[in-house]
Image (cartoon, one colour):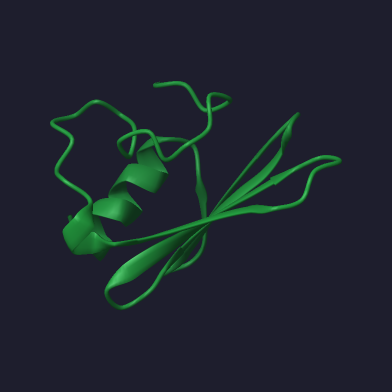
Length: 82
């Protein structure tokens, strides 16, 4: 997996580009942000009333998912496949 694949996945799954390396998605439960770094990405899940959940992964540690629509279980259940 690489930065371009993460960015494409984000756009296909309802995230809006803030800039070329940051994507955000809003829903009734809160806000999800993806920050793409040089060799990794950071997922920030800010649900209303809860502390933010941070998940960071290196690109090399994320296998290609074969079109499953999810980043191998990194996203919470509130973001089902589209």
